[in-house]
Structure formats: C-alpha cells, structure tokens
Image (cartoon, rainbow, N blue to C red; front, side, top):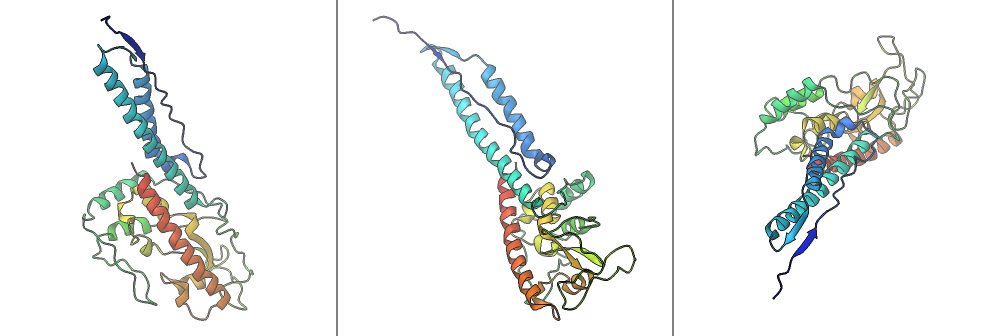
Amino acid sequence: MARFVALVVVCMSLFLPGPRAAAAPQEMCSAQIAAAEALAAQIAAHNAAPHVFELPRQAAAYAAYNAEAAALEARKAQVQAALAACAAAMSALESASNSSLPLRPVPETTRVALENAIKNIPANYTPPPAPASGKAWRVPPTSEIKPVYDILRAGNPGNVGNVRLQGQPRPRVGDRDPAYANRTIPLSRSGNGPAVSPDHIIPLSEIVSMPGFHRLTPMNMYAVTRAPVNLQWMSSKANWSKSSRSVANMSGVDPAWQAAQVQLEIRTRQQLQDLITKLLASQV
C-alpha cells in the first residue's frame, strides 16, 4: 500500500476588532481594553507560528495548533462581550443625551484607597435590607461597606458647574421651583448664584447597598456613584428636605412634582441595578 502523505494548511483568521465607540472616555473600560490588546498579541503570535503540517506524521502538532486556535476564538468572544458590555454600561451611566456632565475615571489615589477598603469586605458580606418606610438610607459606622461609602461620598457630586442634568439646564435665580407651588429659586447664601444643587436621585447610601455593588471594581464603583444618569438639579430647600429619603416621604411639596419624582426614582433605581449587573459581567 502506498504511503499517504498530506500537507494540511491551518491558517485561522482570528481578528479582534477595536472597542465599540462609547460616549464615556475609553479610560472607563481600560481593563477590558488591556485584555483585548493582550489577546490580540496572543492571536498575532498564533497566526505567525508555523501552520503547515504533514499528516499523519505531525498529527499531534496539528491538533495542538487547532486546539489553541479554538481556545483563542472562545477567549475572543469573551473579551469582545466584556468590552461591549462595559462600553454600553458606561455610556448609559454618562447619559450623554440628557446630561452634559462627563463621566470621569477614578483618580489614582481614590482607586488605591478603594482597593484597600474592598479587601476588608468579608466574603460573606450581605447588603442590608431597605429602611422602614419613611426612614432615610444610612450606612452604619459598623457596616463592612462603610469605609467604601466614606471614600465614595467625599466631594460627591461636588461643584459640577452649569451643566445640563436630566435634560434640564441649571436653574437660574427667579426661576420657578418645581418642588413648591408659588416659590422661585432664590439667591444662594453665598451670593454666588442660585440656591440649587445637583441631587442624587438614588442616594449613595442606597447605591452602595445594592446587590452586587460591593463586588464591583474601584473604577466601576466610582462610575456608578458619580453617574450623571443619577443626578438632577434641585433647589437647596427641596434637597435639604429630601435628605437620603424617597421624595414620596416629603411633605408640603407640589403633588404633581412629587409623583413625577417617585416615578423617576423607580426608573433610576432599576437602571442602576441593571447597570451594576452588567458591569459585574464585564469585569476582567
């Protein structure tokens, strides 16, 4: 019987596309981009390796090459999915269609502080239940998440400038205060502008207690707690009255405004929870 010799050419096309465009800066998904770049280098090395095999003599090498190719293809799908999920989540958090406030990456000193604080959260940590009706969300001093909360609360949201939030520009002195009938926005006590402030629709004390939040990376924790999608302009009077409670528990406010605010809270709470879940799936 004549000896059978076959030359088999295996040249798999393993192309890794660049990250999907997002409204938020690329730095927001830097870990996913780094993973994509590392995989691209592995794919390039694989495709540059010898891929002509003589069968059956080199059957083992042929099988190994194909196995590596299959593993890289599977990894490529994972990396692409993580990058796409991160980009979509950051874009939603930034809410560029309704806000002109950009989503910024976590400062390095804050990132390091968060990393250290996260290490001290026990593996069996369970987020606390919601407070009783009418009560404000609080993070007790003894809570395992308190150090993380303190870091994220500092200077948040701070002075955001004359930006658009929830599709609305910063109110001016003399504008109608939508929270109260027959009231207008006064001058602030400092005299430097209108008595308004950026309000967290869902308070930070509630966000850090959402399921899965404690498992986010420092970058993602920072993004979620400073997300423009969770900010709106509110008069200082209304913001002080609201505190960290639901608007549903405020008294003396315009009923139509209150009802609209409750619906905004419901939508934003669900959106933040969905984005936390999406970010968890995107982490590498």
